[in-house]
Amino acid sequence: MEPGWRWELSPVHLLRLRRHTQDDDTLSPALRLDTFKMAMHTMADGPVAELLLRRLEASDGGLDSAELLAAELGMEHQAVVGAVKSLQALGEVIEAELRSTKRWELTAEGEEIAREGSHEARVFRSIPPEGLAQSELMRLPSGKVGFSKAMSNKWIRVDKSAADGPRVFRVVDSMEDEVQRRLQLVQGGQAEKLGEKERSELRKRKLLAEVTLKTYWVSKGSAFSTSISKQETELSPEMISSGSWRDRPFKPYNFLAHGVLPDSGHLHPLLKVRSQFRQIFLEMGFTEMPTDNFIESSFWNFDALFQPQQHPARDQHDTFFLQDPAEALQLPMDYVQRVKRTHSQGGYGSQGYKYTWKLDEARKNLLRTHTTSASARALYRLAQKKPFTPVKYFSIDRVFRNETLDATHLAEFHQIEGVVADHGLTLGHLMGVLREFFTKLGITQLRFKPAYNPYTEPSMEVFSYHQGLKKWVEVGNSGVFRPEMLLPMGLPENVSVIAWGLSLERPTMIKYGINNIRDLVGHKVNLQMVYDSPLCRLDAEPRPPPTQEAA
Image 1 (tube, rainbow, N blue to C red):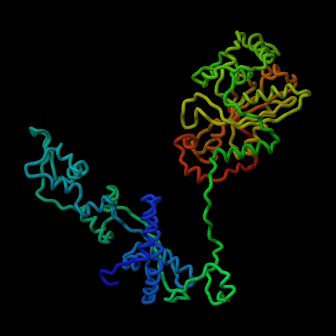
Image 2: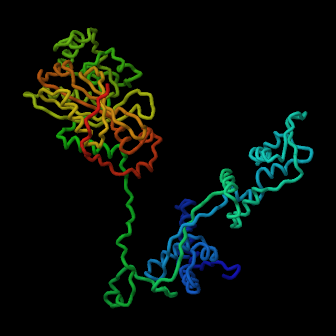
């Protein structure tokens, strides 16, 4: 290549660039720059390919796309790579082998130091023979970094007894800037002259970086030729009618090429897992309950579940109460009276809580703390139907609690609930259903722990081992609904109801390996995570060993 040789764009090319970049006021500056680069790449592709073929014809073996082509042509390496790929698409014209090489490059700060000297050298040169106040030295651009390095090199000293405060003096008359010399060696392509210790020191100071360069080794193919005939990409009606298609080369179809992904929305991982949960419930014969009310009365959220009005969960530090509307106006009063009597006087084999039950407290509106309020409504409706028919209900919806936020708790989350009502159900039935349910989720490491709930007896907490957190995490709660809850509704005495509930977020965290719930829900969620999250398949796995029961 002759010295001073450079690319010239024709007036036509310049006009195209102007139309694509400058005259389009709808493009942002960044997009205009991208369009300009794209147009440059497209226009350079043809002449670069021709030059590559001519250089390859004159060579004995092959050419490196970076060293012998991009450097000599004075172009970006990516433009040469585009020409190589264009020639590859023509068939056996060239052969290109992808190679990876590692080399050392200066960082932006390293280039500055190679040009102007190291920070410590600049500090040394800034100190006059009479010394310089340390406070003034620290205000220099290289003061803080250069001072400590110059002190460790014993080029300078600090006199703390000076009248006007600490003063910095030179210790030596001159110094050698080894950092600048080493960086200039790397800049000149002689990084191999530096020892491993010297390179490591420069890397620690973030002046040097090891980069991997991917290049192509280009050689002649079996059908090599310096003349390029453009291959047709479409068969037109004119070609067929004139018969010219017989003499024209066609670009072969690449059936392995991936198509351009269409623009589309992306489902959040919670929605994917929710869909799988719903499918599992339906496969097990469950019917979905209506859960269309976030606002619930204290009666259905607490009282109908045989939860006393003085229970701590009904305090404001655990529950979000509404100011407007503050009270529920419509309640089934005959059922309300039976619930009131069970709480205050007992009944159905229970002595109750022996306190004065207040209707005003039951009317208070709140953001529901669990979907069990929806289960209570569904069971009450079931009790009004005669004769009794066994049912299996489920729900998946949002609940609200005044929780302290941490890695596994939010004030707003989703609850999954399953309810089975039939004659003679026991704790053994509950454990069997839970084992089958969680196995379908792909969660096999389970533990059951006895627990207390006001509306279930017996009760169990369900734990699963979280591989990311390296600990057992509570994933659900379960139990058998108490007679004090069921019999006031009007259900037969020999009917038992087993139920369990779990959050949607924690199984999602386990399935997707997310350690902090705030990375899954809330304003800190990375949208790229939503785009990249795979499909959720909670496939059935081999039946786990017998479930461990915690004491």
